[in-house]
Image 1 (cartoon, helix red, strand yellow):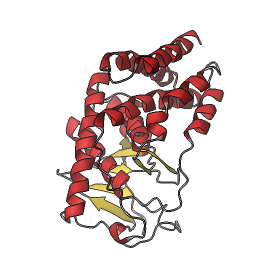
Image 2 (cartoon, rainbow, N blue to C red; image 1 turned 90 degrees about the vertical axis):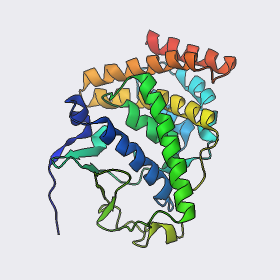
Image 3 (cartoon, rainbow, N blue to C red; image 1 turned 30 degrees about the vertical axis):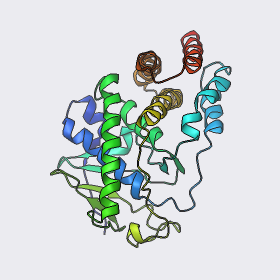
Image 4 (cartoon, rainbow, N blue to C red; image 1 turned 45 degrees about the vertical axis):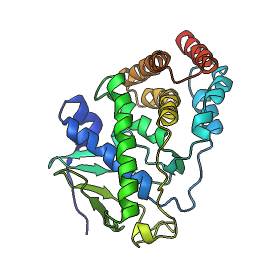
Length: 278
């Protein structure tokens, strides 16, 4: 059975100011749910150093950026929080005519630091809010992830089932359907309840919130370098330019957070100088 849905991308919806804060935050809840419950199977773990090399080589930035970026990724590469990489940019989410969200593109993109996926949703593109608000939304994600962790351990949350649609409703009127038709035949993902699948859910609470926020801010810079070229290739010049502005604004914001060491801040300053000189 083929079901037709109509709507626009979440990118277009945000551009038109068509969605509410509640619905925007709804996807944060969905993302926490995905990161916790989507089985990793035999997905390949992100090689961050190789990704950095590819990002910079495919950009118009100086190659001197590569060793500097490799120096700042320790919080990410050592993260306890790796999960299914949803690639959560807003082109991959549909805002349907019935005001529900439809999640697209669940292809195998490996598993990556959850902060990287979160940074993708909050920063690229367009912006639902300013950089300070987006940073505060990281707390919303952390709190929701930890709440889900506790509720699943206690058995309060019903076990979701894979099928043609993976539907769930978390704390609101909007039932969210995740189209899983393109992963149903994946040999690494069964149609059994996720929580009884041989790959256990990710139930490691985010306890070091400062470290997770560092991972998020570093991720904004890494994704920015990648997405700047992505939008440029699509001839979305305005979006490409805004991404570069985001990289610089994030580095400026990093200096105000007081969560990085002086050595790290010196590296961020050198990164910003290279980006501005390009």
